[in-house]
Image 1 (cartoon, rainbow, N blue to C red):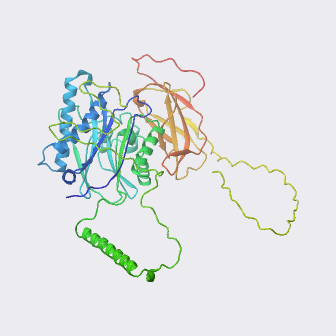
Image 2: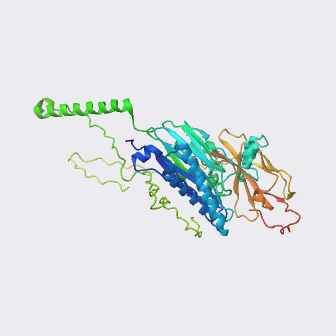
Image 3: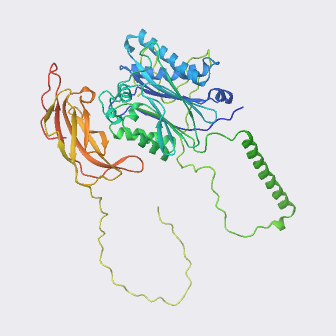
Length: 506
């Protein structure tokens, strides 16, 4: 009978700062039955829904539930890889059918990335869309999955570089998802895990704004739950333009308990230690005077369990599918609400110690009066001096661009950019209240492409500041903020142009 593998699991999901509801979902199932665990392993899923009118939330929720149900209770004759692929295809059929029968859900779909951890070191990852799986090993990160997106096709065809793809207006256009067609192609990958590996599953709301090397640094520096929370916080710090969801898995003490010959060796070692302890105890009972311990320093005992006030990793309630025919749907992971089918519901959205001293009588004390020192004014702690601000050069204030023209932001800076410094480019549309970071680069220019973000035309405001990466993978401003400049991205001729905004820059 197999022993249960102990994984450290972290999970987090947030609607972001620009969306009023969350269409992402996550779910996982770790079988309590050791035989089921040995046969099928544990599964972890992130899904990113789309479709509007809460249909995206329905699609992503149905995706992970159906996959877990079909993977564990589907065709028992299939292997791990085949079962995972089949489960995702059946989930696609169900979502497609729901969208076809209900006009409110027409066009809904979902991306999905699913990971199965099986045995001592087997990892199977499947994906449809641009939700990703990363493997972090020895502080190096590698993307396991391959995005099914338009920009990925352009990169493969050498029409775009990876850097150009990150800021292309069509970077969110996906070419494959669940629910859009009656059938779907599923990519499945196999990996062998090593002790101390980290696995990250995430939606594009994280990977679009947090760089791969930042994900690796956070995953390697923190426990799983703290790591995913810091990733989500960093994505929100950079504007949180989309829903953000992530699952982190780590192996802090290795992958599994010892097996085979090694297990017998470990067991014999434990028996030898126990036998020695029994012999010493008997000698102490028979001749205690001969075993009087020699005085010495008190040993320091390290507790095996942390104190009650220490921060403990959260306890997760696993998803528990109910065997058929009682229910085809696993129990959800709290606290993610489940949309009721077939009608969508609301979005898921010190005091110093006192001592008593005994005084011994002695000669009278000689009291010497010392001069009273004059008050000393303590100098305040020096405030870090910010470096000079960058100077914006192009485009000049109020310049106009039309559709198809490439907009390149350029600036100058008289200082030397350190190895841990970057230029943070901030921008906002006239309808937005605050700037968000759209890029973090080492060059003194940043291309916005040939069309405005999200095809939103009008008045844009931008500025630049120099930042430094700190230990927790967040950033700290080290220069003054540049002056703000403005430019126009003209609307198409067939759309009435808005009245220009006036007043001081934001």
